[in-house]
Length: 298
Image 1 (cartoon, rainbow, N blue to C red):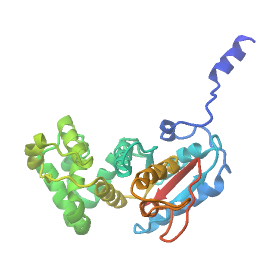
Image 2: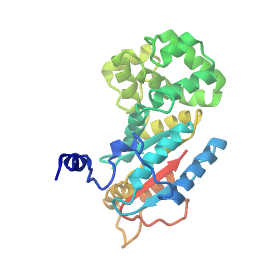
Image 3: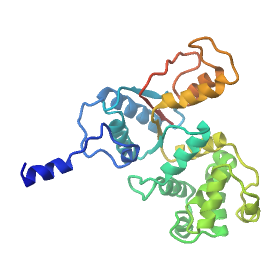
């Protein structure tokens, strides 16, 4: 073997498929036609959500053995969705409560680069600043370009509630926490993250009062729903769940401690979770299979 052959061998990769981290970087090469029917279905659902913000298409299940291109397809879809002005979030295999993991997926995904912004959180807040028609000086504070002031945050929230009275009344606390998450000051970042993770520390009571954050914690499910509604104001979102069978297995194990089941029977909790994340419509059947990924569009 000569030097050139050795160098070529060193460049080879023997992984069966991309890692979850590589989903965010976009595929180096995409073969047109690979899983094309599924890709077309996802992008068609995304387009419907773009045209009608109230649309909430059913989840799309990707099934296949390792190495057939499911994770590669997620990476390509992430690239396409973001370039079209949407958001992309990736839920890994849950290790604890499902809704806690979904909050983690949103918070982690908001730090990921967006097509025309440094990250998806900046894209969201920038879009909401456009809708609220805030002054450029206030926009700089909200986007973390300048230190955040209480007056600047209040002006943004007031204008947002004026232009979006329905959503503003219901979701302004979660929006306030997301602005704090983007602040220069790391103590404000921690304050915002604590609210969004439903972990309200007594030691932070004075800081919450200063920034007009409520002193009671919302549930993780409420946080997920409110972030989703805020995102929908500026573009559709795709939430990809890697190996959704593991998520359902977790719910099955928890349910089994409370119910006696006949073979193959699903509990109410499992069926409800599948309906909530878009796998099925009420009354439909779904048999979970190994090596399954899921994408939902909101």
